[in-house]
Amino acid sequence: MTKPGSLADYRATLPNQPGVYRYFDHQGKLLYVGKARQLKRRVDSYFQRESENPRIRLLVSLIATIEVTLVTSETEALLLESNLIKTYRPRFNIVFRDDKTYPYLQLSSHEFPRLSWYRGKLHPPHHYYGPYPNIWAARSALQFLQKLFLLRTCDESTFKNRTRPCLEYQIKRCSAPCVGLIGAAEYALAIQQTEDFLKGKEQRILNDLRDRMNQEAQALNFENAALLRDRISLIQQVLTQQTVSTGVARDVDILALVCQEQEFVLNLTMIRQGRHIGDRNLFPDHAETATVAQVMEAFLTQHYGEYPPPAQIISNHPVPSSELLQWMSERIGRRISWVQAPRGMRRVWLEGALTNAQQAWAQHQSQRLHEEQRLQTLQQVLELDALPMRMECFDISHTQGEATVASCVVFQQGRPHKQSYRQYHIDGITPGDDYGAMRVALERRYRDRGESLPLPDLLLIDGGKGQLAVATEVLRILDLQIPVLSIAKGPARKVGAETLWIQGHATERHLAPENLGFHLIQAIRDEAHRFAVSGHRQRRQKRQEHSLLQDIPGIGDKRRHLLLQQFGGLRGVERASEADMAAVSGIGDALARKIYVTLHGAPDRNG
Image (tube, rainbow, N blue to C red):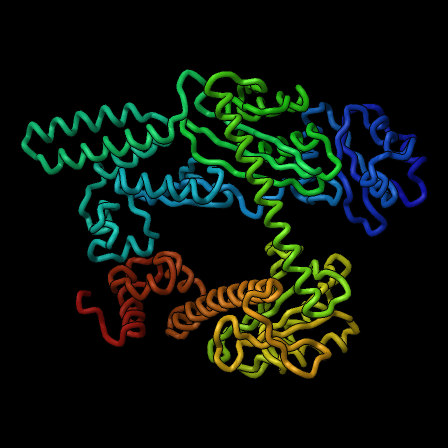
C-alpha cells in the first residue's frame, strides 16, 4: 500500500502485468476497484492528464493510497474485482443494487418434502430450482405446482402435529401426507414429477398422466380419471402460455440495456427450459458518466458471479470482452453463445425486453418526479433550508412495557433505504416509559455514530409534544443541529387527521390530507411503526419461548433448544403430545409429563 504523499513513487514500482488495483481516501475508505491487463499503464492513466470526466477528476482528487493485487490471468482479475465490488460497494464503482437476493423454489429433504419459495444461501441436501427474477414469478410457480401435484407447503412443526387435514386439502391443493391420506411411494412420485417439470421434462409427465388416466378409466374409476384429465389440461394450458419457442437454447437470458438522459436501465428476462418465467428491471448506481460497455460488464460480473449464466445470452449490445465471455463459460463448464443481432422469434423476445426497459425508465422518472415534489412540499411546509434528502424516523413498540424495541428507518431521496434500518432493544428503564425508551434509542443512534453514519436532514419521531421535547433535549446534549418533527395521531386517532409538532414552534400544525409532504411524513411514520412492531414481536416470542420452558424444573438451555428445534417453536411444543416430547433425546416420560402439565394444566389423556 502507498503512503500519503508517495503516489508517484509507488506508481513507478508497479509492474505491467494483470492485476486488481484499489484506491482509498485519507480515512482508508475504499473509493474504487478496477482490473487491468497492464497494471502500471492503467493506474498511470488516471494521473498523467486531467480527465474530461468530472467524476474521474473527483475520484483522483480523493485518492490517498493505492493497493494492488497481482494475478496470473485476466480471468482471475475479473473474478477478484467482482468479489471486491460486491463485498465493499465502493463509491465510484458501478453497482447494480438489489435489495433482496433472487428467490428459488425449495424442495426440503424431508420424507414428505415441503415445497416453498426461498431466499438466501443454498443448503444441501435440500433441492433448489431457479433463480427466479422476482418473488411474483416464484410464487406463481409454487402455486401452480402445488395445484398440479398437491404438495405440502406447511412448515415442519405444523406437519408433525396436525391431527386432521387442513384447508389446503379441502380445496385440492395438498394431498394431506401429514395425516396419512397419501403413502410415501405415491408422494415420492408427485415429487419426481415436480422435479421433472422444473427440469423441462413436461412430455414425460404428460405421457405418464395419460397412461394413468386410461388405466383409471378402464377400471371404471371415472372420478380419478377426471382428476388426471384436469391435470393434463392444466399442464397444457401453462405450456401454451409460457413456452416461447422451440429449436433454440432452452435456457436463455435476454439483456436489454437502455440509456436515456444519462441514466441506464437493464431489463433481465429469463427463459428456463423453454418457458418464460419473468423479468426484472435494474437501475445501476454510480453510472452517470459510464459507457454502455462499462455498465454491461458491471452487470455481467456482479450477476453471473453469484448466479450461473444460461447457455445463451441475447442482448442489444456486444459482449464487453472475450475474456468476460470466457470467464462466464468457465462458470458453467460449457461455451456460452452471445447473440447480439437475433432473428425470428429471438428478435421478438429482445424487442419485448427493450420495450419493458423503456417503460421501466419512464415509470422510474415519473416516480422520481413525484418523490421530488413530495420533498419540495415538505421543505416548504417545515421551512427547511434545504431538501430533506436523508430522513430518519423513530418509533417505540412494547406490550405493557415488555420486550421494548425502538426502530429507526431511513429514507434517502424520498425512498426507503432498508440496508440502513436499525432496531434497538431497550432495557434498564421503567416498563412502559416511552420517553425513556426514546431517549435511550436516540442516544445510542447518535452518540457513537462515527464518521461513516451521516446525520439526517430531518428527524421524525412517532409521538406527540413530549417525545419532541425528549428528542430536542438529546440532540442539545450531543450538540447536534438536526431539525425535528413529531407526528401524533390526534384526539380522534383518525388517519389523515394527525397532529404535527415542529421543533421551535409553540403550536401544533395540521396539514391537508392531500398535501404531498404530509403523504411522505405518513409513509415514513408507518414504516417506522411496522418495523418497530415486527422487532417487538420477534423479541417477545424469543422471551416467551425461553422463559416458559426455562421455568420448568429439569429444563435447561440444552433441553429447551432440543424441544424448540424438534417442534419448530413454542407453538409446536404446545401442540405436541406427551409421547412426542418423550421421544426427544434427553426428555423421557417423566419430564414430558411435567412439561405437558405445565403447558396445558393437566396430563395428556391420550398419553
